[in-house]
Image (cartoon, rainbow, N blue to C red):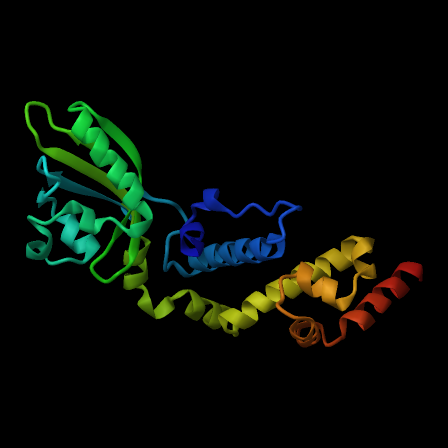
Length: 247
């Protein structure tokens, strides 16, 4: 998801509804994605635009028993199967568990209606046990019992393979001089600092409440992270803010 947004597709930005207890985590993840997008644009490692070259089409031909008869060249390359290990096998074996119910429902409809066709999102499972989300169109060929499954997928993994020396954590470490955990922790603290500066009500929160608001698992971890980031305890930081407000 982060690399999807980092490549320019910000439509899947996490909503940070104020009533959602995951707000602080959503803010942190969205900020990481935005920073990754800026880093990628500056470095040229991954285009910061959602180009069609990042999309790939997979085509499968099945018989009336849903056995995989043939497929285009991209299928073994993308799904990382040897062709002879999937040809003449049940296509359902390529469907991840999360999409089994959807696929079984399609099988029922195809049995009932020879003209049935549908477009939906299915999750495919690759030969190396990764999940690939695909938008699939399923339909029967005219004058034939054969069934065609045509899918379009965003191949972010290929971009990662090309730039495997710069995985997400390595990009953060290289450009921010810190690991993923430290970077995320700093984002959470930055978020709570902004709240303390801009909304007086947070200055009345206990350290425990501030830690929960910023998404830390315990008060101790929060206060340590706050001190590491600011050089001050949360209590002293708040007292300084109050002093500045009244001066």
